Image (tube, rainbow, N blue to C red; front, side, top):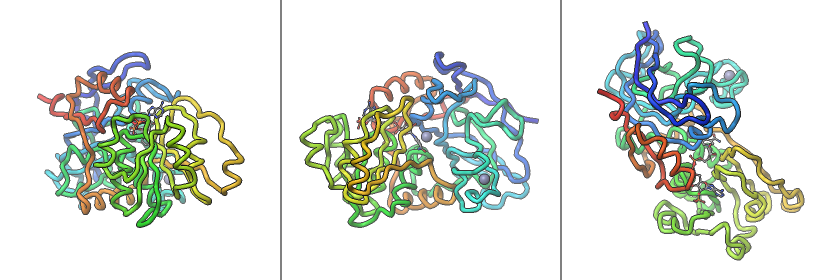
Length: 352
Ligand code: NAP
Ligand code: ZN
Ligand code: ZN
């Protein structure tokens, strides 16, 4: 029998989020049931809640930066035990058979990953999957991560999306000591990119539209700061970088950033705005053999590797804790780039 739990949901694209009761399945043999302690607030949650990408199903319970405590495990679960601090990111299942899944890249599952929210619910417990803006969930052990004990659980929650989404391209493009890396946008993803690229040994340049974030950027790991709306500063940065990770959540001109790449440099888009970017200047690509790419979160194996890397380097997110009831206000502040640097919901506010 599924059990009922408190959650917060968007009932429609134009309505604020509010309380909803949802069902979670009893743990099957390979399942881990957990009480949710903390859930980070990703800009993707806002894009989904407001149907900005056009494929949201309602009611929508967002949340894919989840840290919880195990309350029960199935008979075949050996890696997790009751009381352990665990985490769940953007996926709760995949086909596990296709070439991508076999390569540990469940995020690129050819049959479509089961995302933590807004995906068909294979178990039929709900109309579709519901995310971490809720007090409990049940997830197959193959999609549950271990959180290093040294990390603060609330600060670790954003690693599950903001962390892995920036870690994965930094690794894929082989960022390391001596690499000159640019990070565009200092929000949830951007601040993780600064910390991670710095820890990997890169020389890091932050591009921001918010001059008031400069001091924070230095503390978070930036060696250089460029105000991206200042043309003189942008010209000075031309042809200087090997790799750029662009985390901006809104449509903007990519060309000034492409122009900052050296020959053979690449810019990877992780920001996924509602509206398209203006056209890219092809000559700018051709003449310096530059690449424009994209990247989606990361696989489960790499997510564990990222958590362990953060454990070793003492990296967590800079967070502002909020009760569940403040989520609509948090969304408005996120839209004004007024978050330093991730809201994290304390699910104690929905319990009792
Ligand atoms: P966020 O915390 O709101 O940060 C976005 C940052 O972008 C802002 O802080 C701001 O930085 C900059 N920005 C916002 N509007 C801008 C504009 N009009 N022009 C230029 N810069 C602007 O969002 P987030 O949670 O980091 O997410 C960022 C994006 O990544 C979202 O679109 C989200 O959906 C997407 N995402 C993608 C993946 C993936 O797998 N690819 C995973 C997670 C999230 P400054 O103040 O420094 O300019
Ligand atoms: Zn996310
Ligand atoms: Zn697959």
